[in-house]
Every structure is written in structure tokens, then in C-alpha cells.
Image (cartoon, rainbow, N blue to C red; front, side, top):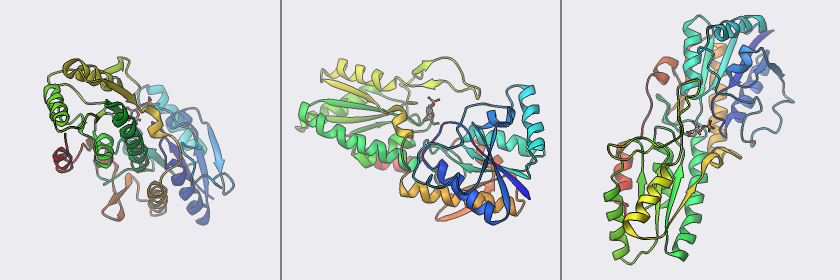
Length: 342
Ligand code: F6P
């Protein structure tokens, strides 16, 4: 019997389980044995696996997170680790491996493919910053969670005549801030792609106040930066992929606004709530389609590819192209959002 492996790496997100379920269901139908690699690349280094059968994926479609566990382990960080991962790939007897992740996990998948291993990928991340796909699964769930939070902040902001600053995730791309800010009717949206001019933000707030509106919602992406300033980080320590932990920009923006305008301001940091819980119907369907596509690529021996959504079609794109650069926000969409600032 042929063997296909599957792993989920990087930050978890809603929609991972639908991908796993789709791969298992399709693979079993095609007489493949499915090996779940636990905790991302860490599981391949440590040969930590679990057999996946119909029973293991029963009922997981609406479940958030990943039944396989995840980690931010980069096997290429230490020579020993990548050698162990390659040895285990052979020892387990994998005919192919499906890596489900964002730019870091898929970057490793691409390197492994270039080193001669049969690997394909599926694009996951709430940040929506992966190239060559219109959207990644997890993003829709995240923006719906943030939009609901903004709606809730509106009513309390209005009652107290306050400015509400809400900090959202997204790393170096402003997709979550932009789309949830648009959907939630934010007065200002601050994203990493546009340096923050705090004077302009305060003047928008004051203008709105003159119009008789005494409350405002400001959405701040965690990766936004002040003009000529530096990024706000929680700690300087880098993870295995060289990323700093972002966070704190919302508070900085809130403090500046209160200081400069005198209006009472409160800050909400949504944090990991954006990544938790059940996936939306859209993410369940997208995850399912990506899972089926990756298994289809395995059956066709079309390795080194990533499943991608383009328009309404799921196609295959080279992993190399998908991880070569970050997909930052569509400025046309930002310009639409700007019409509603203030
Ligand atoms: O990449 C997904 C993401 O949620 C980012 O938006 C965020 O910056 C980061 O992961 C947080 O990472 P961790 O879960 O390690 O705190």
C-alpha cells in the first residue's frame, strides 16, 4: 500500500482539520495509507507519527486548531535536524508528504522538494499573506471574529463617548485589519503597508468630533509602524524562522491619541482569539478543496506544487513562487477604506 504523510506547521488556524479530513477521506478511497506527522516539522525530526483512518477524522470538520498539533520548528535551522527529518521520511516509507502551512512551513516544504523529496503544500494562515493564492484558509474566520468584536466595541464606545482602539494580528501584512475594519465600519485603519501619521489620525478624530460623533473605532494591525519609527515588539527574541513577536502597537497608538486629543481612549487586543474556534463555512469548504487538490497532486506525482485559489478555481502553483515574496494588501481596497476614514 502506498503511504502519504500529512503535517500542519506554524501558527494554527481554523480550517486545518477540514484539510486533514479531506486528505484522509480521498487518500483512503485511493487505497493509500495516511500517516499523520505530529507537531509540524518537529514530528518528522522526532519520527512522531500517528496513523490516520476514517475514525480519526470523524467529526473534525467544525473543530478549530489541528488534531495533529503544530510547532514553529524549522528543520533547516540545524544540520542535524534536517538530516533526521530526511532519514525519517525514508524510514516511515512515505511516497509523498503534504505540508499544510504558511510561508515558513511551505518554505521548508519547498527546500525539501528541491532536495529531492516528494512534497506538496496547502496554504494556511489567518494573515492571508501567502503569494499566488487569492486567499488562504483561516483568514475568513479571523475577519469574521474581528468584525464581530468591532461591532461589539461600537456599542460600548457610543455609550461612553470613547475612542476604541482595537489591535489585530496579521504580522507584516494588513489584510486582517483592512478587511475587518471595512466590514466593521472603522473610522481609521492602520496597516503595516502605510506608515502611521499620528497627526493625521488625530485630525480625523477631531474632525469627526466636530460633526457631533463623540466615539470612534480605530483598527490597528500589530505590524503597523509610526512614520520614520520602529515596529513595536513584545520581545526581541527571534523564533526559528527569524520572526520577532509583534504586539503593543495598539496601546502605543491609543496612548498617543489620548495625549494629543484629550478624548478618553481604551485599547482592546484581540490576540489569539482571532485564531481559535470553529471555521466559517467558507474556510471549511476552502480547506476541503485544498485538501482534495493536494491529494490529487500526490496521485498525479505532481510534486513541488501548492494548491491555490484563483478566482473560483483551485489550481496548482509552484511552491517556489508561493513562498518567494509576501502578499501585502491590495492598495485599491485600502483606498476604498480611506473614503470612509473619519
Ligand atoms: O501567523 C499567524 C499569527 O497569528 C500572526 O498573525 C501573529 O503575529 C503570530 O502568528 C503570533 O504567533 P504566536 O502564536 O507564536 O504567538
